Amino acid sequence: MIGSIFKVCIFISLFSVSAQVRPVRIIEKDIPNRIALYAVNENEHDLDVKLTVSGTNIRQSRAKPRFIRVPATSKVHMKTLVLIRDKKPSYTFKLEVNDSLSNRALKREYELIKIKPRKPIVVYLTPNCEKCDSLLGEMNRSMYLFHTLNLAEKPQIKDQLQFAFGEAQPIDSLRTPIINIGGKLYTRIEKYDEILELLRKD
Image 1 (tube, rainbow, N blue to C red):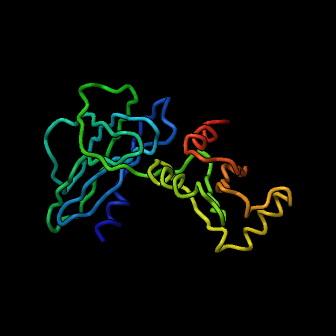
Image 2 (tube, rainbow, N blue to C red):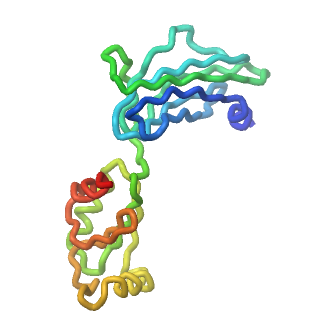
Image 3 (cartoon, rainbow, N blue to C red):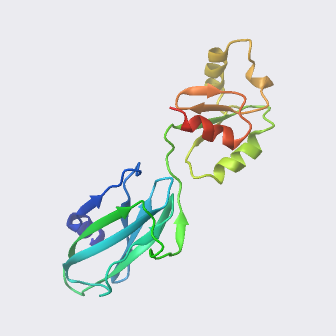
């Protein structure tokens, strides 16, 4: 019930910066008699973020809001609001975002998150793949979300891919995965850096 009330009561004023690809989001986490606000930076570069909250039937720190460093692809706790018992809370907030990083910005603990790449990535694991485990390990440690399909378990998809490649490139002979990046298929990728290079191309 509390969550639905807050979703109605929140309004965002966002000051974007030129280098920002995606806006910073504020998400809520309900805790007993409180609500925690987190800034989520889904960009590939650090940002300084300042959150100013005003409203009724809530209590918050009286300290003047300051910029807080929100690293690339991370989530940072910004503020906790205390709810007034038996009162309906209502608040709005203003979010200021700056890509000109300041030494005065507060540094807090952060949680790394995964983000969608500029081009979707699908990894098809080939039946005799020798490079799949090492490449998947690198990708799992990366910032990007991706999908994985094991062709040994998906014979129909394997047949479709084989038809696309033709008889000159038997899938069973591949020692690398087949990787779909933005609709283009690649069969010779062995390192994660090669995927990054392809993602950065227009």
